[in-house]
Image (cartoon, rainbow, N blue to C red):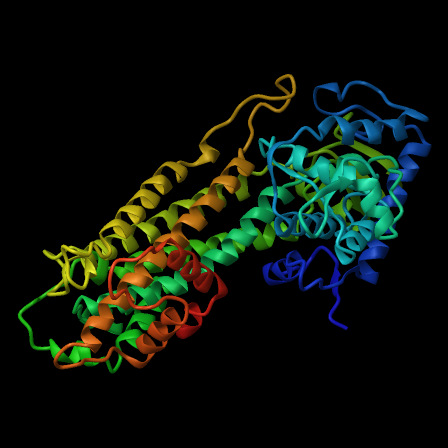
Length: 534
């Protein structure tokens, strides 16, 4: 009843997350109209092969070997050789969720009907998702041009019953055995299908999509935690006045400012110092809308890029049918070129290009990494203000009861500082680099997978910094609540405080805290804090 019918045109990032979550096991099926388009494109490939016509990666080798002609029985042998020779990944395996996202994204791209594969290829990918068969995919080995060749080749290995899969317990088993258990027949690949499976940006896009969705939860959580810290530091909500942000109308800034007004609305702490002499707060409080808001706008941009890429045809060559061929000719005015454009049937044309190049995704991944590094950075500055007695507006030094005998939050700030500094290194953009591959045929690459792998670490680091800030802000609010004249924060602040206290008790004296941070990071990842301002 809740099956996802893919057609290559309207896959949402939220649907990717649902399918990626192996526990949800949402069924995936090829939509009937998409099946028709896939079959029509396949007929063009079959006609080309039957006519022994020349087309890149169909009747030729690949990369630097594209001038080598392949014919007859060699075409089927080429498919297996391409998959085997490109499955050269190393390093840690992608988690199951990221691999499942990659499988769905690859299937959806093929479902557009421009790749020329048989429908059974897409059906098999869907059945592997539906029955929990997850290929073992090493995370390193892609330069992000000609797509994520190595990761996708490991995925393709599993389809043909070779290589390894990962079972639900994380153990690696032969792919043939995994397919047998799931009652899925291994594929025997036909002409063009190997290159269609391994050309694409789906590895970097899968990692990036799940990172983006996690980051959207982080920025909402940061508004909540930042609001708590602002109140605990006797910050003013004047800087969040709607009029200020309407005259600089960046949508993210406006959104965060509204969240902060809600977070401070009705706070007794705020009312207690309304007539104080302080004119302005430090930037880490006053400029939360401008910083968090810029992060929001970056996330919105990356969401648009990833959404477009998720519904794009990104392998090479591509098959164009009927009106698409006419439109292509009108748009370019170019005549057919040997090994780049080959007629296979009167209703279709096969054109070689470079949609596999990962540059659009790589740029977005790097931009997202930079934005999240800023989110963690301003959070660490608020932690410093909460614990530093010179800056904390009368809070106990390092938020420690009995400071001196107890160190309180002295070292958590150091941990946050370490994570923020690590992010600064990881945020160096991978996409500004390139290295020549494939005998200088592939002479400018995106390094998108490197950007994706770095981004995952930044997401984790940022979540942990916010966890530390959440624990520190809750501790600070406890001092107000238990003072001689108790003061309460706002209703939303109280809700956030209660959520934090559900997994992390008040520090009455020094204790081991790393488990608190882990539980708070899980709380943030679950979205419970984010929901307070949604």
